[in-house]
Amino acid sequence: MALVTMKEILEDASKRSYGVGAFNINNLEFLQAIIEAAEEENSPVIIAISEGAMKYGWVELLSSMVKTAAINTKVPMALHLDHGKNFDKILTAIRYGFTSIMIDASDKSYEENVKLTKEVVKVAHPLGITVEAELGRLLGKEDEVESDVAIYTDPDDAKRFVEETEIDALAVAVGTSHGAYKFKGEAKLDIERIKKINSLTGVPLVLHGASGVPHELVEEAQKYGAVLKGAKGVPDEEIKKAIEAGIRKINIDTDLRISFLLGVRKYLSEHPEIFDPRKYLGEGRAQVKKTVKKKMQLFSSSGKA
Ligand code: G3H
Ligand code: 13P
Ligand code: ZN
Image (cartoon, rainbow, N blue to C red; front, side):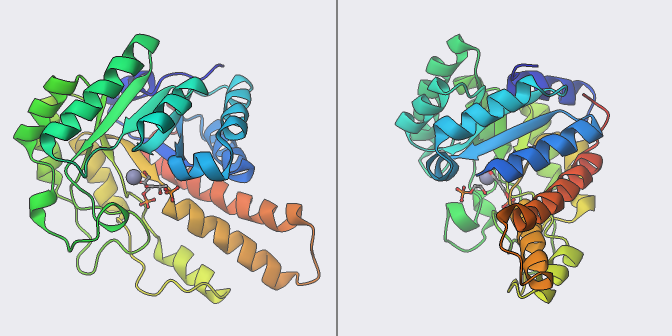
């Protein structure tokens, strides 16, 4: 089927209380892995392309691949711009047929965030394109300051933000961060905050930085030479509680990157004589597929397409 909007996917997730994975891609192999997993799990799926991915994978090529793949796929699929920061990139994504856009002005003041988000809503909504925005600030890649509870999303601000901007989905800061090093101490999310924001806003909530960075995966990658000392992600139990509390879209990139890395490293170390890229990239792809399937089961989106 043709691409659907993210709004349509998230509405069903809200109605039936499950989470949907938004998986980042930069190239062909990740896309194939995600689609095969979604088909086998009979799960709706969101393909996420960041501004960096638009550049690396050539947005005209990446978006054509996704649109062609969607037509030949049975499960509902949305194509989403992840962390759109520049208005010209947002317009480019719209031009190439993305069915969902994230405007990330979370590093700006509340007023500036509202203003920029409203500008995107004004362009996207008449075209039937979903808009996600973020309030509060995640650590890691988005910010270099030390963890501080003051940057968590404030529930009353969230209510006002959603009313003022009329967005379709809200990304919240509740304890996660991007990348492989999310927690120094206990790995916990502010579940009560999610519940409160959910009850006040009524829009589907988005969890960025949701990778689990599973111990087994990290250990195995390290066996083949990866250096990931101190890597730590969000435990599966916290993800389940977050979904119960109202999280509907769950962003996963790091777990796919580590899975791919494991596949490629393992293959190359076991077959030093091989130089056919289809062999080692194929093994990376197989590992990504395995991880995506596990996520779909964890989020309970399996069987919901
Ligand atoms: O949160 C961002 C995603 O992990 C994409 O990362 O900007 O390096 O493509 P990227
Ligand atoms: P991870 O780094 O935890 O995979 O988060 C990805 C993300 O939030 C993409 O927007
Ligand atoms: Zn993110």
